[in-house]
Length: 134
Image 1 (spheres, rainbow, N blue to C red):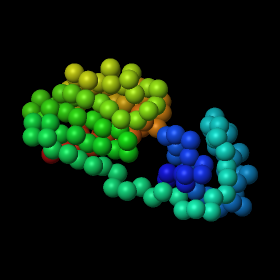
Image 2: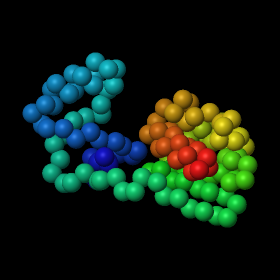
Image 3: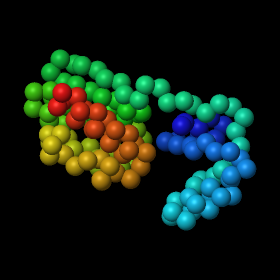
Image 4: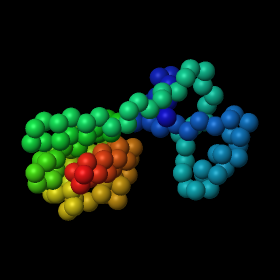
């Protein structure tokens, strides 16, 4: 889920859990090698994900947006022509590795990305792959 504005600091992701479980959950997360930025009770509602994918057909091109990341391919060749969005530091690297390659040749963003933007791009990549095979 997306965090409420009072605790948002960028490309954030939150996990909602009962406050009484806080200590056990923090221990489990840290045991997995993940260091959370914090655990805070919130009074405002968390942002529910809206339709995860927004698809735009530009005639010869198809763009899929997942969260704030956009991936565009030429429909006929399945060549990636654009990667945009986000603000995470690995977005330029992801774009450089993917643009100009077909969906089948390009690396999966999940394998080379390390941020929430990379994860969103992976979702767009999967959705585009699914739509282009249909």
